[in-house]
Image (cartoon, rainbow, N blue to C red; front, side):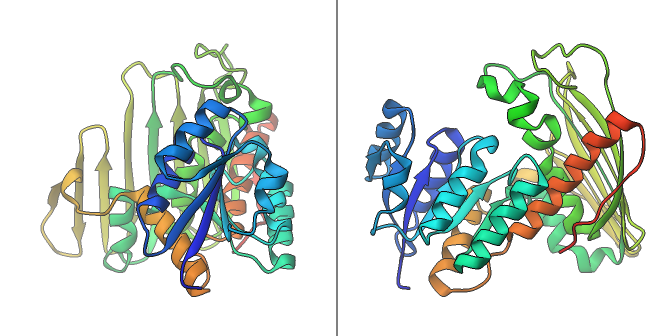
Length: 331
């Protein structure tokens, strides 16, 4: 394939960013159409990327001038939009989280395999600053054995109502921290168990689910990960530590600082803004488009998106039961 003809379902902020990135890669893609229930938003995005606006998803996915579709609707609608795309024989990029339960993820994976189309999940954190630095330097770190991340903010602000609903968003672990969960898997491999506690007090952020989680995840090679997630922190912080037998990386997104030491080397401090990586959203879209054009495997297949969802789902079950939850999804 010389070029990938692209469409978008879901013209919200994330969808706009993804399709804009595709539009800025004319050597790989041609954006032909976008679809959204909100005509005003859909037409605005269509004009920005020089594409056609389509209101009806059924006719949209059947268009002959589209090879691949970016699905950026809310996660509770990922399954329906992705399956419609796959049934039409189109490759699909689905924004994180892949879905709000493992069963929906598996259904999407099976459908894509049967139809022979590519399925990629937008776990963009892998390509962002300190996270990409740690992954790029895994050989310098030796055998990784622990990852600890704290990500806390001070509320949702003026977001869409569905983000405050457990049934539609999946809660904070799906809506926000499936990013960190996926990164932990990149570092430590397949997870075997999760234990989580959550804040039982009424949610001050207007959501119908807990706004604070502490989760501990065990991995099959003996690695451990800890995640502290909250939307009830009046100060807010985003920091993490990646520990290996030959080195460590510490980062603090809030202060913009990254520290590392490999082996007997000096402790080095860098500004996160000076790491020099390309824009993460643009990079992930480029990776998807190249996989389609070159007919190569996507870098983040559905199985990896599903594995992250299983950990989040297991953590939700654990905080309800008070028990360690075994995990089975591997890649």
